[in-house]
Image 1: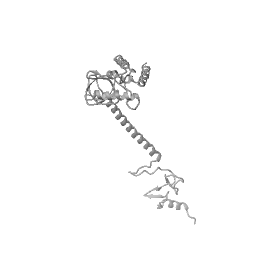
Image 2 (image 1 turned 180 degrees about the vertical axis):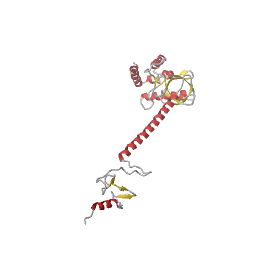
Image 3 (image 1 turned 180 degrees about the horizontal axis):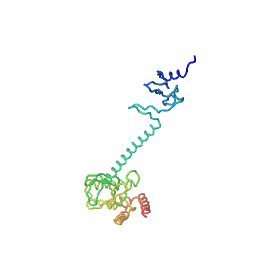
Image 4 (image 1 turned 120 degrees about the vertical axis):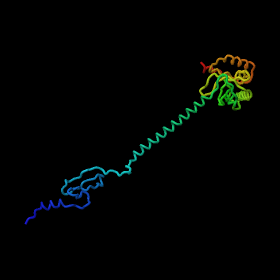
Length: 262
C-alpha cells in the first residue's frame, strides 16, 4: 500500500518546532512566527530558510539600543568635536584678553593733566621728561614742550650734558608746585606741556642755560622765543655750546629736525 506523502508533509508543517537555531519557527497558538537571529557578518537580523518559507535572507533592521546605553562614536568624530571645543575656548580666552588690554589702555589715556592744573613732581625720566601726580592722585608722564635733551647715560661728552639736564629737573621741581600748560598728547600717551615753577617757564630756562636743544620737528606757538634763547646760549657758550663735540652733534640734530619738519 502506497503512503500518501502529502499528508505527512502537512503534519510536519503543522507540528510545533522547539529548535532555537536561526530560521526556526516558534509555535504561538494558531500562528507560526519565525525566530530571528543576528547575522554575525552583516549585523542584520535575518529569517532562516525552512519549510514553508521562501529561501533567502530578509533584512528586518538593527536591534534598537537599550535605554541608557551610548552609541559608538568613531575617532574622526571625536577629533572634530575636540577641535571645535578647543577653538571655542581659544576664542573666549583671546576675547577676554583683548578686552582687558583695551580697558588698561583706556585707563592710561584717562590719566592726564589739564592746562592750569597744579601738579607735584614724582621723578625725572630723562633730561626732558618727568612723572607727576595730577590733582586726582594719578601718575602722568609729561614731556617738556619744544626741547630735547641728550641721553644721560654713558661716558661721552653729550651724556655729561644729558645728566646736567636730568639733575636740573630734580633740583627745580622737587617739593615745588608745578603749573601746567598742556599743548597736546603724543602717541605714547605722554602729555606734551610747558611747566612753570615760581612763574618761570622751565623749558625756556633750560634752553637759556645750554642744557637742552630746541626741538623744531613740531612747531609750537612760542618756538621763536625758544630759538632766541638758544642763540643767546650759543653766543655765550653756555652748557653744551661750550664743547666743540657737542656743538657738532647739536648742529647735526638741528639739520635732521629741519628736514623732518619740511
